[in-house]
Image 1 (tube, rainbow, N blue to C red):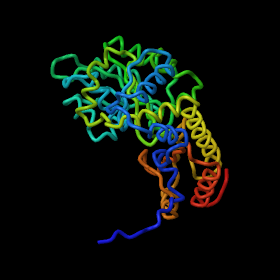
Image 2 (cartoon, rainbow, N blue to C red; image 1 turned 30 degrees about the vertical axis):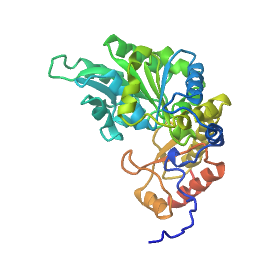
Image 3 (cartoon, rainbow, N blue to C red; image 1 turned 90 degrees about the vertical axis):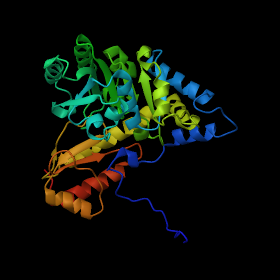
Image 4 (tube, rainbow, N blue to C red; image 1 turned 30 degrees about the horizontal axis):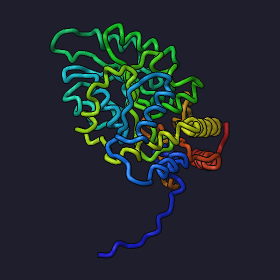
Length: 357
């Protein structure tokens, strides 16, 4: 049976559902093209991967250990598995990706480590609740807390400051816990804080960072960065067993070189953040729209009447609405334009009745 030759047209209204919807940025694409010449050793034993690891070490100003995996689920899950034994537990926020969106992968790859999730305002951990979860029990029947997992930027678009990270790390250290950071949108946090990556990771007490690339303009590939190299012992075996050791690793590692050497990783994040800031200003002026969380990275969360949400969807707009009843998340990416933002704002205004504050 012949496959119909259907035209593939980009859908105009999809770009605010997720930054994963965006394409590959020119710098990452060019780096993959440059790596696509001749014969190159496989499984990461190549100069591209070596250069990418060194680029990340220079970025963080420390001799960290770096591994590349296909996606964020693998990065988070394998990193946590490396830090835990099956009878341990990981403490994270209620909305953390490792709790809500990994399909049990952290538990699977750690052979049963339990996820303990707690509440906290604006997507950030309430440290008093963290301490309560650590100290509530110490008997053998309770999964022993081993890791404190932070998300930077958070799932609701807020950003941990260096002081907040340091305070959380000090609490974790006091009770013998390691600190892991889900940094799927870490670049957006760096831009928002205007600080060096080192200042909001290992200098603030972070042991392991899962550094995101796909949401910031790469096709595929996240980096697991161990600032404490001892914690990376035999991590390469975990990657292999989990199906995360790419045979043609250069096509995952080379884009990191292209993204870092000219600053594209920050340029992309800054553009996405700026578009979100513009969108926030536009939506805040519309009667019937309430901004739900401070906009500190590249997402805007709003609450609006359910009828308005339905009108937007009926008009072809795609967005997630998983934060509360009537809430909607609009995500900007490196590829979002100011025209896209104004078009969405006008659509929201129309869906809400056309009035401004």
